[in-house]
Length: 486
Ligand code: BG6
Image (tube, rainbow, N blue to C red; front, side, top):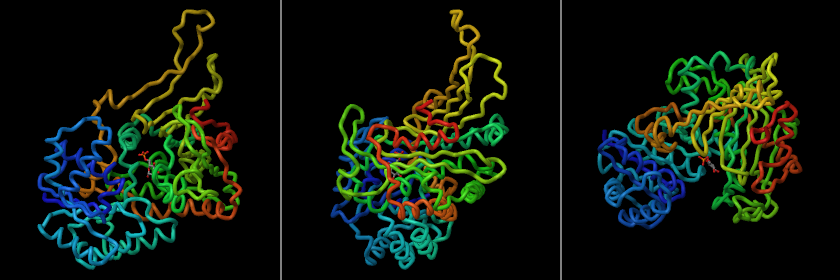
């Protein structure tokens, strides 16, 4: 299969940090179809050789699990080409079409790693120059819009020239190994399914914590994002869907996406008036992380001095269906938190009648860890084997630990590599359908509305902590606690 993989925004951060390394890894592992070109473009005035050198320098600044040789990079560079294009201009679309038209590839993937404000114009332009035939697949990087109205407008422009089969909306969390394993755990095994419901599960906690701040994206983040738009509307709600969805009839993209959509549509809507009780928002102040002083959010470059943009969100969600009625789903994400970690914790109910002198209120829990390493842990109680009298008869928590590196070797595939392979294979199962995005926007809109009306609900937290104390209080109301507080 001859393919062209086109990256618009080819010199952006995402391109050199994530996308090009992903293509390179797929190339190194023989996972790319044999006859391909990788075409990158941006407004930078570079030629092919200049781009290859530019990329090589950036690759050298990244840390690689498997270091690469000059020869390997040189072979990869043979696939690369670069042309400067200002893709916001109509003439650039014709130039792009001529470039792609230099040969008749079977598959043309056009990856829009550019600002979402350009999506509509680019797609309309692609339609005008005929780059929307059946060979073409377009990948849209998040965020797709700023709210429900802007997301709908972008989607309409995109759908006017492309069919749903040609649109690959990225949520890179769906490409993570542990998310794949969560699907495998739930639907490839019989063990958990009977327990995976309100009768046995007390609550579910999903955390994506970052120790980094807003880095070089302060201006963009402050004006257009915030943690709710950046993480909750997409990554966190997608993870919630993976935990809560019913078993799909097959692995087919629409079978999976239909089930996710049902979860999003079953989320108990938040009334604007309830938001202050159910949703905590915070912003980091200066603090210490890994022994170093770090500035507060308002001191970051590009951030307005009196900014009210949230860098932390914790919320309590409920799913109104027979499986999950009454089970709280706690979601939490933030920047400059105590450590980088992402996990899904499923807390099972305590035994109905404890007969052992065991830690009181003990609950089994299943932890699906996405970061920093992929693993699945099951916490159980077991008899201690300590000889001392006082310890005899006691139970202690132990972990059944599935470490994927140990089980399958160190060759894990990064999310973007997995997703790009899927695009080349034409498989949509790890991509988000627009109706899912719409439902997710509907869910978060009352939160945006409440915050716009009530700026006083913004709390602060010191960098290097787990967020504002109100986040713990949110769980305490249900008798629950975040994993690090247990
Ligand atoms: C992106 C957000 O989607 O995900 C970033 O825009 C965030 O703000 C990133 O840092 C986190 O991704 P990961 O894979 O590093 O957890």
